[in-house]
Amino acid sequence: MDDQTTWANAVAAASRLYADLAVGTRAELDALIDRIMRLKEELLERTISADSASICRSCGGQCCLNGKYHFSLLDLLAYRKAAVEPVVPNFAASPACPYAGEAGCLMAPGFRPMTCVVFNCGLIEDRMTPAELTELYACERMLRRAIADAGQVVGQRLDRALLLSIGS
Ligand code: SF4
Ligand code: SF4
Image 1 (cartoon, rainbow, N blue to C red):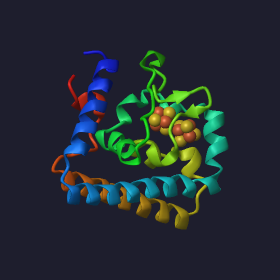
Image 2: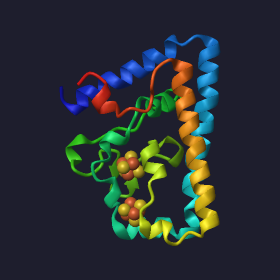
Image 3: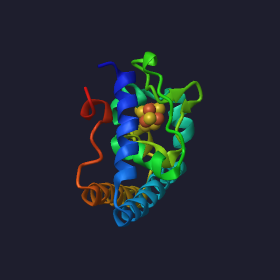
Image 4: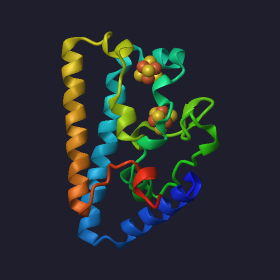
């Protein structure tokens, strides 16, 4: 099955999963998705002091190559919860990330996959103080915990690579 068909199937599956949740379960998941999105935003904000935006721009987003496997079912559920149409991937851009455009990532920080927001290369981490790094890693642990909790609420892991785990 090609990536575009797998993606379309996954979008439909995420929609069904979300719609079929019991009201109480959906409320629990919604609260966790809110927390997850806030933590993702916080993680990116914490790298600003290291001038990450300008460093990543100069680098050209090397760590975004092959980023298509970063996207998970949970990321689609976040769009569903927000009642926002998901990002439109361009799989023909391979090996560039299908979720990127000429100006960089097409997703707002809160919607980006976990792998994208927790990874910082040495160019960034070397410019952060030990105290800043300690806080960054604590934030990452909270994010991973909230994502695991979301999976428990729904009764299945939500953080697997979408294009590898759905219909391929
Ligand atoms: S984190 Fe590092 S490798 Fe990734 S885009 Fe930024 S500078 Fe480049
Ligand atoms: S989703 Fe965005 S941040 Fe993640 S790899 Fe693709 S372009 Fe980079």
